[in-house]
Amino acid sequence: MFTGRPAVAVGPPGYAAVATGNAASTAAAVSVLKAGGNAVDAAVAAGFASAVAEPGLTSIAGGGFLNVHFTDGHTSVLDFFTAVPGIGRIGPPPEPATITVVYPSAQQDFRVGPAAAAVPGVLSGYLAAHERYGRLPISAVVSPAVRLAEVGAVIDVSQAYILTLIEPIARHTPSAAAVYAPGGDLLVAGDVLRDRELHAFLQSVQDGEITGLTSPGIADPLLAMAADGSGITAADLANYQPIWREPLHDQHHGWTVLTNPAPAFGGHIITTALRLLEEYGFAALTQALGAATEQVKTGPAVTTGTTHISIVDAQGMVAAMTTTNGAGGGVLIPGTGIQLNNMLGEDDLIPDGIEAMVPGERLASMSAPTIVLAPDGTLTALGSGGSARIRSALAAVIVRLRDGRESLADAIAGPRVHLEDSGVVQVEAGLSVESLAQLREYYEVNLWDRTDFYFGGVNAVQRAADGAVLAVADHRRNGSTAVVPPD
Image (cartoon, rainbow, N blue to C red; front, side):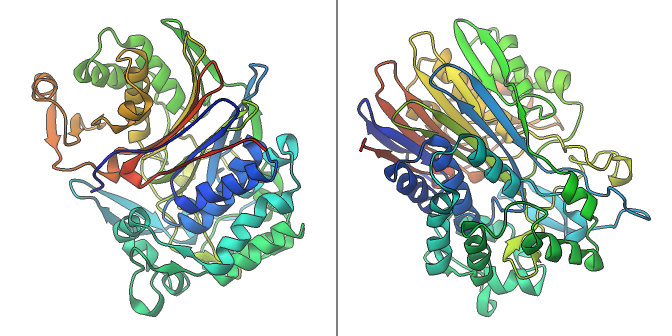
């Protein structure tokens, strides 16, 4: 759908760089960096803003991961992904409703509604990241999102496309339809999304009235949804905690990859594929990813609606953060304007059924915010949305950087392929005739006639050894970039 090249911004040594999935998310990060915030402050600010501006991809009631790389070389990953609900529940888990999302050349069934919601982690994750590594007060970090929610977020072409894809979900309940289809018409590019309840909720976070999942301002309305079929309990909210983890660390060909560790498995698939890769080319990479997926994937994959933020500040601290709301639950938490996730709404996420899952455990994820260190000292932070396509998108970009010696912009712009579990390879428009022929020797190929949202949205920043910075955001999802001069 989206043609052209990725968004690119370049800065000299001493500048900060930002790449996100939306101009408003980028503006929030830039505002906080200019106010003296660091990369974590900026990532959290962009995250709160993306909950306003990217409603089809993320939510305060979703889940995610933050990969932070410090100037001393240390790296830490915050896991704030969603958890299985039902601690202390009496009776069987509820059954969600089913809706089909249709892509141009594929389709996928989702279950939605309160019964499809897992325990959310985004709010707790943002607050935990800020508490440990933020520099500015939380009021300053949330401020850009509060202002954005007050005036309304302009729907860009990417968000309009996403809303079209998930229209049955956006209209699933009157509360959701009132926000995403006010007056009966689905929001289109150029329209302004207004959610006064979300504005009031963000104001409460800014004012310190809401400090986590057990705060009455979110806990009470969330638990009240049990009457509508939600399986989330008070014990779930009290039990949930973001977890700091050591990154998965892999070195190969002189390159270091620091990515999301278990229980998520996207990072394991990517690093395993990079090690299995014996030659440069799409057929070889597809085979390596297929083999790596078989070796690593013992659980479910992440859901459809995902966005990624990459930031490097002027001092060299790096934050790579991926968040998701699934395809969205199609229902808002009463009085908050926050759309519930539908993490329990996919067969891939719960292959053995909800009843086989253990309450309190993290759901597995394909999300893989990643730091790549090149032998020459160049650091690249990247991540992607795109469900199962996350592994294909990130592996392709890393291989193009490492083996193809391509620029970051070219690595992100290039056509992508994705091997489905069914054995069919989805191929984006633009692949060479030679590469296409090689793929067809091994796989059934479905050739798309376009560059599309389906193939992910890689947003990345890069810092060279001399401190010069580069931001590149994927045109497939209308990504946005900026560089920020030092004070």
